[in-house]
Length: 462
Image (cartoon, rainbow, N blue to C red):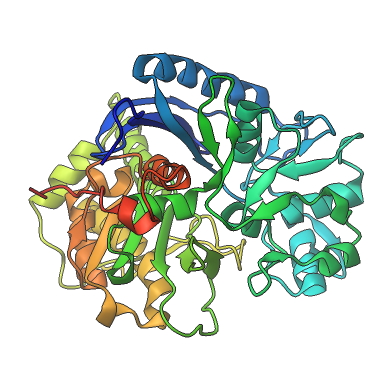
């Protein structure tokens, strides 16, 4: 029973690569009261392999969201924060950003280093950890060797950690393990960075941020609102979309795609493309992230528009609706096209590319090409799960992201491929919602994340 006058609204922030959003959530019911969002943008990069974003602009936008929502829904119970993982920015001793955000898409690690290896490949061999380009420690390694670390650097952190610092006035970052592990060179066994491996590679371990695995409140805003430690967006999405974690698999298809499921029982050697990540309350999450994902469908849509233009017809801004209509009135061919959608490569094989097979005179049609792309996207996700043999314990496939919300055929294909019914969360901002659940638990509004997760509802629920 809540005391009279207890704040009931939570603000949650999600700092994504392509979009930044803030939501206001009614704590007792889980109802999303308002959503504010705006596209994130990249800065022109001095070097062609860099993928950087403006830290100051991101913080200004976040502050504008808070300024709009806090007075409107005051008093505020707490603020939760999540955002894009892997990427880093550098801080001085005052806790001020002195660099742009080097995002997870940064390609510094793909540059050739020595012995025929790229920076990320060399660091993988040196450290014993799988290190991809865009991982924070890989970026740090590249910057260490090239002398690109700004003078006066005291620490580094994710963009969501920095936003939490600015809101609370902290001068040193406190990074949750869900974010820290995404940097790489992180030991799951000890729950800490492998300092020896980092120092062996020539990096300054003194720049490593303090980490925590607990559900913690970082500090308070100037208005006295508790702010939770920022958490990784993969784990936040799972937390905010799945109310029965032991029986469910989560797939997210937007610009990219991802499949996540709770670690069950004893650990096995991980298949290629699958990671074991820290979750919450001492648990772990398996996650696999095809690099192309939903952008494969966007690639096909752009191709169709270029064909229309080639015919001398002004192409519409979008053909997605026409593509969906075509699928709804046609059946899958008995000899379907086989599309492999690794158009952006994979983390293990960055140079890999997609392909189309089984083409005949009869099946090379727009509708079969569309269905082939969707099948390829679903298969790329399923292939990450299949070696773990979890179908027998999977009751639900939770699907999120615009790629599945807007495409009924894709939902049907995913359901068939994973052999489980598809459930779509009612709220659209799953990662932000997960950050809200985490923050509510952090301030004691709910006694556990499981208790908070009971707020999650799905389309079709009564």
